[in-house]
Length: 113
Length: 115
Image (cartoon, rainbow over all chains, first blue to last red):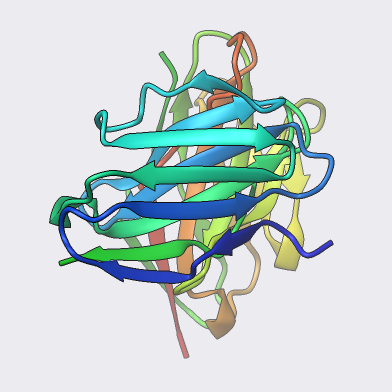
């Protein structure tokens, strides 16, 4: 298996622009997670899905952030409009079931200027 | 509410010496416990987990961790450190009693193995 796939790996955009991050989880995994990692705040859970349904989005910082999972093999995290404080590394992870460990993608490094 | 603490921001150890990275947790019920490692510019990688059973859990790359319920700890250990073990280590916990899958990660401990 190729593992969790994220694209793009790097994204540089200007403030106010829309940013879309993409994730393909491991086939057969029922849970998908989006995290954000910064030096100041560490690793933060933004939202997670179970069987394509959003379960907990309490970590989404504000309405500018939205996430979708239209099918079992694809999820997006969108920021509109982006702001410099959104600069971070965004990770997608998946797990087989509720007791399983999470498998992380390589991350997308987002820089908003 | 569940929580996890990694009291050391950084641990330095000489190559060949044993290493310990500390983790304590708080849950209302019984815990699932995990250790992950992150190398520079990479995603987190799963090392090992405790779900139930033996308190000593063995994982990847020669790492092991001991679950101690009375001390609510899950320290990561390795008998002989390698320079290549230098990385950021995260402890994570999930309350079995929780009706959801949310896992809480610690703040991470940077391990520096000195040649």
